[in-house]
Length: 97
Image 1 (cartoon, rainbow, N blue to C red):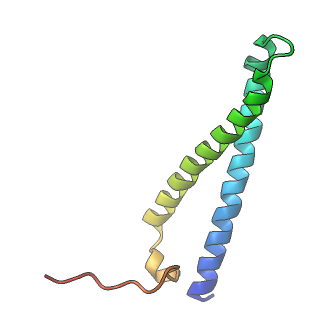
Image 2: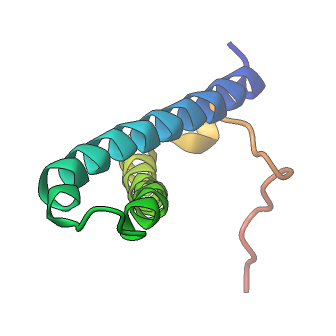
Image 3: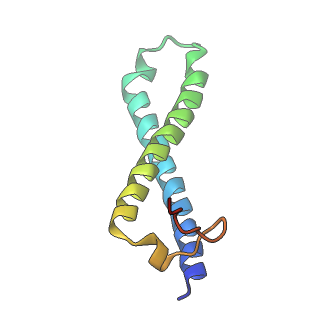
């Protein structure tokens, strides 16, 4: 496979991974809130609707950090310049002073 194909597949795989981690976090946080927080709320409390917003935002934040951690691990293990094409243009050689 070419470097461009590898880059495209890497970005596609990373996007799918990030979406899946977000969905798993939403489900996990919903279960935790259903067990620990929602039963303690008074009936007809407006906090129930805010819990959904907080769960969604927390899932996005957690998935962002998990994604960054996974990318750092992959970058340490794989020579990115060897297998992937630059996304924003060719890399310049480092300056010599």
